[in-house]
Image (cartoon, rainbow, N blue to C red; front, side):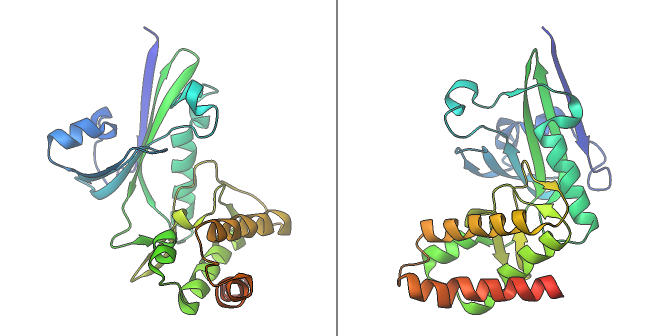
Length: 235
């Protein structure tokens, strides 16, 4: 058996973290698992000594998921999915940008492959932008805030690999971006910034934000978001 594992964590959030922190069954047995999404990402909401958190088990998407599932090719500890995202989230937190706060990350290696997990602090009382679309509660101030928040990340050179309405959270305190798997720091060039915005636009359209037609979508949804983005870029 050539299995090996490691954990990185924020010692200020919790003095000690064990491998059981990354096992939903262990939290369920303690009555500390409150929700579980079995889709891609295997997300669970857990009560921990560090507060209410979100546990995500990394899973592949697309056609390769049927072959490899939750396994990734081992290329070194520093390049494991959880460790990379943990480091990026720590950098984002240091920049005081609104995102999930990292608590811990882990991997378990066996041979040529590994599996990985990430624990972040839960954003309290939040709904996704997708839920706002579904509820018909999009309005200009919200869209302006979303655009301004995205611009703050772009100004800092933070590239989100999958910027969509499911990865944008909104609560009484403001707008947050989550799920920075495969994200990274990069020079704030126009090409990737515009590509990020186009990806978000496709997501809004796919989820029905254009229910009133193309002209209404442009004037009441997309333009307020772009106005917010321009404001956030100048701020």
